[in-house]
Image 1 (cartoon, helix red, strand yellow):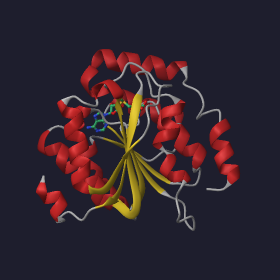
Image 2 (spheres, protein in one colour):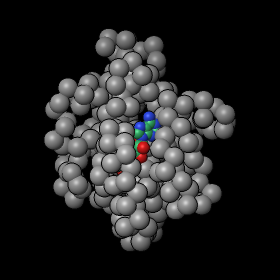
Image 3 (cartoon, protein in one colour):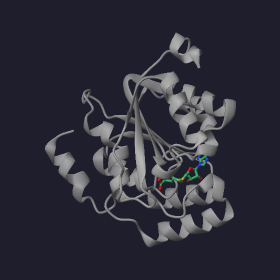
Image 4 (tube, protein in one colour):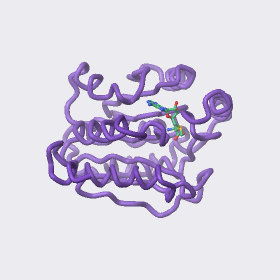
Length: 226
Ligand SMILES: C[S@@+](CC[C@H](N)C(=O)[O-])C[C@H]1O[C@@H](n2cnc3c(N)ncnc32)[C@H](O)[C@@H]1O
């Protein structure tokens, strides 16, 4: 990432605003499916910038990054990703058809899997994509519940390049609840390093970002230890 790209992230209009049409879709889908949507409003540009930060510190710059976004919703993080790395190979995975339609209209030509995040591994191999540089996830807790959640984190870790990163946000006030603690524990089982950001106050509600790096092999003892 050069200094020009950095500054374009800061000023890019698509990355720096939350559009009223996005708000409307979010509210409607929250009322229809509150647990799966998990928020009344899209994430803020400030949270988006924190979520895509590993792209800015990427060391291998000889090829465009491969980026996967899980639960892109109306595209708060997608806009920031496109502003930061316009040449990236992007794959979005969104289960909600209304969100997917909205996203496809907002970002014409985007590669979007309309289905659950559990289809990630198949989607990557069907497309013949190389190891992923960044997985950005806006998925709610529900997607990480039980064995399916462990398998999802395992699939994310397996999809990443050794230098890759996985970012996941969670709301500060739910972080210490049992599902939040379980989510952190699962991350530590599948990654050699898990960093926690400071609170992003400029988000509704305030949130923190987990950045997981050094993906562990599936049969690593740390992963098996539970
Ligand atoms: C909290 S919203 C985040 C949306 C957007 N990333 C943002 O931050 O504004 C959660 C999103 O994940 C999607 N989602 C929930 N469960 C999913 C699953 N199992 N697979 C794919 N997407 C899912 C929802 O439809 C919704 O778009």
